[in-house]
Length: 346
Ligand code: SAM
Ligand code: FES
Image: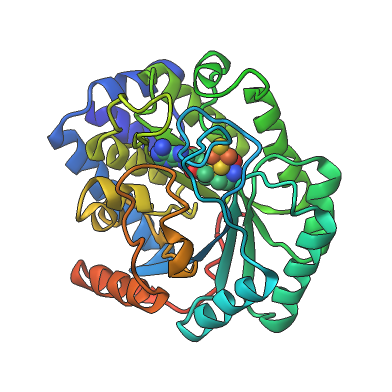
């Protein structure tokens, strides 16, 4: 199997059959070999720097009913909230003082935030903090809407494709949502000029090594600036309540593979990874990741943005999260930096 890792290092891609063989044939020794290679590539381009993004979860209203998601429309046990523009700006203000130079506005697909309302929030943030990058993560919208928000000042967009395989996608989503529409959105975002992030859950229900191989091929083709992956974690109020969560081991392995496939990509060690293991984010960095995304949302609403059970950091102030992550990164020889942290994969 080591020869497949060497081949990936050399060619930056593999065939579907080779991806499947590598994923199915992984072992602890192979993983160590992979992480060594992934770290050396990461150090070549990003040194020991870790970029931070301040995540603002500004609405948990959502028109969708994704089967895995704790804030899906039909979960009537969720206490719904929307942050006002003043609250969002106040999160950014706190974040800026803490050294954040990227803000991520994430939320459910909430019709209340139409283009003009979002556009004015975006342009206010960009006017007050012109040295910061603004990332949106608000799901599927029309080409014109993406263009409008880009023109208002948004720089980046995160939209995980979730799973490339249409059949698998259909088992995770209600019939109205289609894999190809999600993928089309990503191509549109790219065309408009956003720095684009995609990604998938590891260990989502019914996922196979073939599905993961197809995800790798799709990501290679899209050639995004960022890739967000994390383990699927079940939520007790969803149809997938009884399904086992994704593993730390497979998530780390996929992070290492992604780093080798697209060396200059931005790769977060996600909150979900930190949720399934107390040292998940540190291990993610050691497997090739170079970004962490602490929460800037007001503590009063944190627990209401529960995508999955036992989500970490729901009670901590922004400053505590920032300092905690800084200590965690220092403990493994990496340093959180105050920078926009643009992708070198352009
Ligand atoms: N509505 C936006 C969208 O559709 O991209 C952004 C919010 S959505 C909750 C952000 C991401 O959370 C999804 O892309 C999904 O991969 C992840 N997610 C949702 N439920 C999850 C779960 N149970 N376990 C792990 N990740 C989950
Ligand atoms: Fe919409 Fe999860 S179903 S954010």
